[in-house]
Length: 394
Image (cartoon, rainbow, N blue to C red; front, side, top):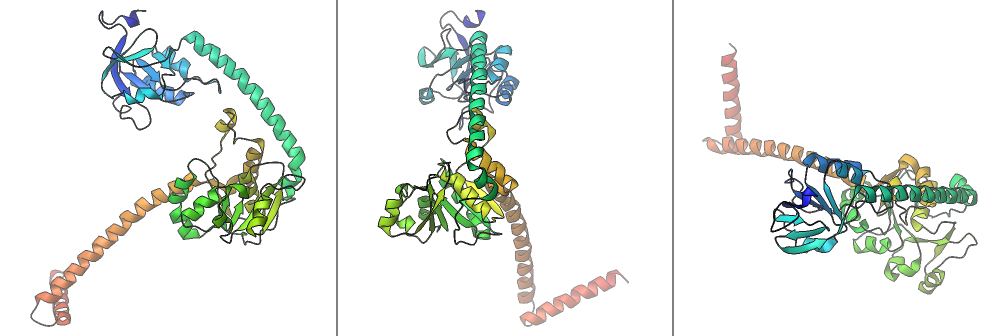
């Protein structure tokens, strides 16, 4: 390939390396002929188009352009635009990658800076991309057939729960008409709770801690009203914090962790259901008892998760979220609203404060500048201004 014969001394495609991974500075500097280094598994059409618009000569992916989980067209688009693609070079390339350095890619997919190799992967060809795409298509169909088969089974077994709330315990906590915050132990739940502090302060929602996320709430200074989950993974101080505890139970009534609750002398209620997700049960609990709005932190869910066969994307999770409908809001949406509102609010406040300070300065200067008392000086100045205006309009 003529692509790999730029120089006699250092064979390979040559160009400026641009670090376009998350946190890298190369995305805005990417130009035609550069070598873009990304970390984007299953690259989408939109992500591919952004690269095509920048016209790099090659794209090096720390991950796989297509993992085989979903049939994505991104790799096809990049190949059709004439780019060289190298995938699976591994995260270790980040230790040697410096944005703006001259680099080159050899025919076997090795990435070099000068004569030093900093990583290597597999060159993607149109044939390999098509093979992966076809396999991913069939895999997705098989997974979706299994997923919706399990969904139908769940509806058969838990129809009364979903339709009429059969088995949902009475919490003893007033929820009807209130806002509820459900915190699930996802990867970002701690940070999301921190960012929700203004929402919590303003609305004082009923707070439900799910599994170990209840410990996080206590550590951040919040007292959960309800705890839903297996107490085996929850701290003793949290369980004794005064929150009402709800134990997920099997349909036959057996609840894991019941012994720990009894040992601690804490009262608890059981919630029998076919799903083993305490998050799903917490959402159903809040909805059944009349929550006006339910904010969920730590457990995002979308159709892409179902397609990618994420462990959390279960039929129960999809059905529960569908049942709650517009009442359910992801925590990041609330955080975004508060961030936008706080920026505008602070600007308005500073403008008003500036006007008040200016007026105060004028009053002080006028009141202290004359020969009389502070009040007399203000009156004399006001009368002088009034007489001046009268003279203008005569």
